[in-house]
Length: 187
Image (cartoon, rainbow, N blue to C red; front, top):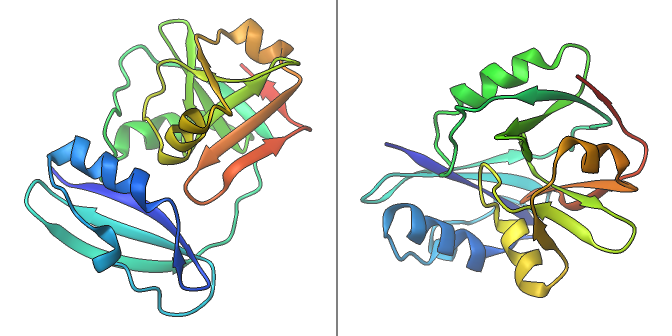
């Protein structure tokens, strides 16, 4: 089984390594200093894709990053989806993403609760706190950092809570905590 990490690099700086290393260790019991493997080729904004298995780092590639604009979401229910580790094989997520119709991305509901989008963890603002699902599909590194800092509260979030939310935020290694105020849903 192969896994990967998506790591933000900009101005030769590598971001959030502590949390990426923790996820690698949790995924395959490898204690690695990822900084030893990551050498950004220039000062541009890069998405570093580090592929690994149970024994070693298999490859490290850099891609110039351009943020995708996400404003509309298709609500997709799937009770069987499983993506608890950052598997290189994303075919189950890709199949759900194909159902988005004219929307920019999907929001996945499992067992009656919001989990994630196809590429990011999610949070909603209830007027007081930023809430993130107790059971995301994948425990992202940015989500882990923000929970540790106390910026997020874990809570089971149903569709009604999502629709009543004042703001929505997506978070992943590349976009950090990206607040979206003008968004729409379709079922």
